[in-house]
Length: 571
Image (cartoon, rainbow, N blue to C red; front, side, top):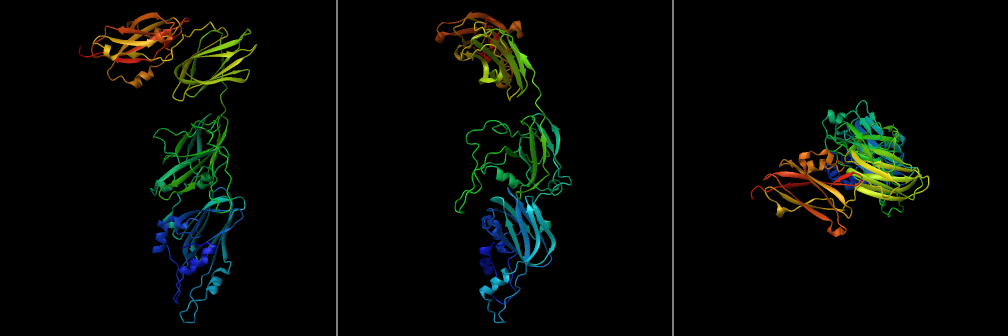
């Protein structure tokens, strides 16, 4: 079987029709020409030739019809034709007409005149076999088709668009499209405020025929898609399928600028699918849509996370045959995430430290309403573990939005009878703990002043079998410093140390036997605000974890970064 487009039809037919008196035949799928063409897929790009058993991609200009041809040589031949619209509805029609069986020349062996051959092939409209109008993937299937010249006419009346065509005379053996299960629906098995869990039945192509199938999920907030090429038409040509998640971890496609989060300046630029101006027209860039796709391998359950609460999403599933790269759409579904739980707002007392716990990626709201008039408000925040996002609004107006790690202090302009709302968003890595103090009295500070560098330095050359010498920075403010030690195993590593980096745990949580000493220290010259200490009475060749705590006037302590040291084994 072979296909041809109008201007090329006459030339290709003349090339393929032998100029003798014997019956004329066109190449079939099994012949050398077709095999060469299949190997060179570029042969069919923007060509009117549809190869037998291979899918072609092409385009239509609006209101400009396109015509393809193919030849079926023998009667009672099985035939299947599949047309896939991408981003616009199509009108298409399949018809057939008879081919001239042999050249007339009254036995002379001379070929028919050119004009006569043209007329024989193209003068008849042919018999219409099938027609369709819409944006569904539609099929024409016949177990016994007559021989003849088949003509496929396509038209897009809505806009310029891509489409795909697949035709075969061996539909039973080809089966390039994955087969759908008896129930092709996607089930929503779990629904939360920010997550939706989907499940579907596996394709028989994978479970029974053992062909390589992977599933690709498409998520958006506009509508369902009927084909994967419709999805591709919406996405930038630079976008690629995401890699499958690691086993046991569902990939979240919303960890970046999608679904309501700010995008970078370039993310909104998307190219139209026609880039060349040689066709006389160009498509304008399309606006960026909240749409994402992810291929997850061959599993048939998946959890989409980081969705927005109380928002409707559309979910589509496509089974993709990785051998042929051809796909079949399941019946899409949609779901609305649950509403955000109403947050309980915690009231902050003037000058009093409040402990706050936030779940992973959770949000907490705090309210501060000074009872007296004030010129300034000071917020002191101590993030015990990872960084947290802090926003402060005064009577609805945003005054502050920053990421806070360690101890930070913010002083804001006050306003009579003003009320302040503090929004705290937890880390993606895990749960967050922090301490926060709000006050209208600048001299009332529970948090100690801290140096820029909170590391402890160990002097390797001063190590002995029974002692180590360390140093740390202080500030111009006189504070109390306490140092503690704890023996650890030799295999104690940075990961274990990181898990113990809760800066809000004070000396009161330590054993008395771990205490080395406490002392007061400061320097008016910030360049000289450094102190050293030698810890003695240690065992040879042993590892120790050292901690330094600075304690403010209000009794609140902050821990420096822990330091792992080891004494010399031989001295």
